[in-house]
Image 1 (cartoon, rainbow, N blue to C red):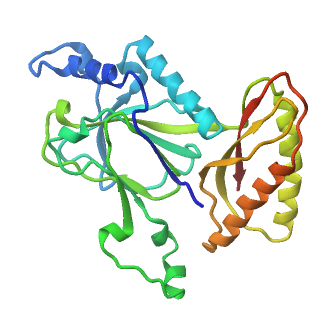
Image 2: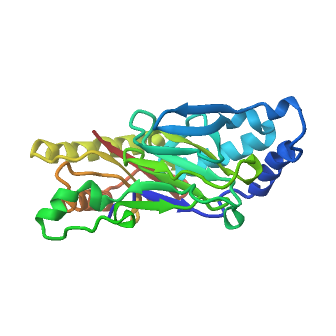
Image 3: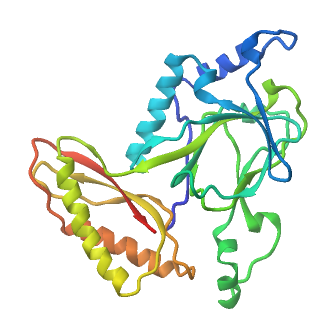
Length: 302
């Protein structure tokens, strides 16, 4: 099963502190403090319009580093990505939006973290939207007799920017942000921190040696290469997490994210590959260690 969109609510314990720091800086609309002069008005005609600033420049060093580290560790445990790109903080007032686009070169997973008081918002729009899988395989669905309607909700999935929600998605999927209408004050705007998870590689929690996991990956790669040589076509990334006992036994693996795509849209091939990897891990045996460990394993197919 594909898992190309992941949402985590109540993501950061000090979200209210981040929001209060933002509000403190902008609570006096007549103030001329130099700290207010932070925005790059980023406008690319018919593509992007948004106020933005590097997030790490806006907040105090202590709280920003705490948030940054929390986000990085989440990415390691849930995606097998060891770092994030330098994140932006973006503010959407009247007329701000992002048109449909893809983020192919930046990283395997994009993230949007919201500091927007969404339930009390005064604006319309502001949702992140992504093309649905059914649209990305539209002609295959037409041939199979499962043609779709063409109302907006049939074409795109909309994700509200709820306060303290982290949204992670496959950035290859065409996506954007609905135009915001109804507010001019940044205090009332859509406010998000966003960027990309990068540097995918295995992540081990516990005493299990990383080299042992690398040996497992080499064996798994050999098994997968046999399938590729037999004609398997697949691209994208998925991440699995599995326990390893002190004796070296591998427990049941869990698919954390799955952005695998068959060029022809055949989900049966995607499912078969996931099963092949899961079955391989069931049979795996790793060296003994002094205690149990957990492994997050990202697999990339290009």
